[in-house]
Amino acid sequence: MIFDGKAVAYAGDLLTCGARILPQQSHVVGDSGGVNYPSLNSAPVQLQNNFINDSVKKYGIQFQLKDERSQEVCADIPYLISYIDSGEVETGWTDAEGKTHVIHANTPDKVEFQTIDASKPLPPL
Picture 1 (cartoon, rainbow, N blue to C red):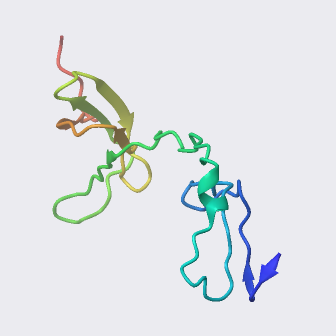
Picture 2 (cartoon, one colour):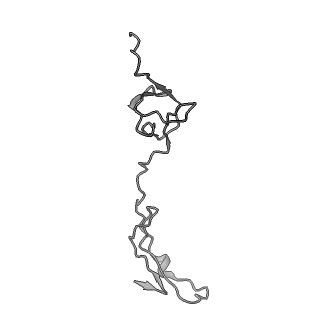
Picture 3 (cartoon, helix red, strand yellow):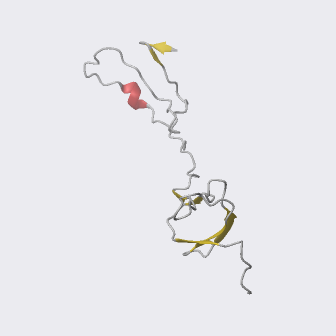
């Protein structure tokens, strides 16, 4: 529906930010003259929990490996990422752009990044 050349939003419509329009709305054309509208205050608005669960991680980082001298990316390099506080360890291989996977977390944490030179034999355990 178009009103005054603008699209009208209806109760229950979902906004782009994730909020939902509550059902008690009114549109007044002209000057209200300061009149108290009892119909707006007579029935309490039934609040709904329309918040979207915060499943988006708040912190993230991605490393990119480049040769110090030539600035060429280092693809297919094995790496290890250690989370200092939690002790978790993640491993992987850099992609064609020399990038690691993106690390996501809900809280800040210190990480240690290590590469493994796969062209040489690994030291004994």
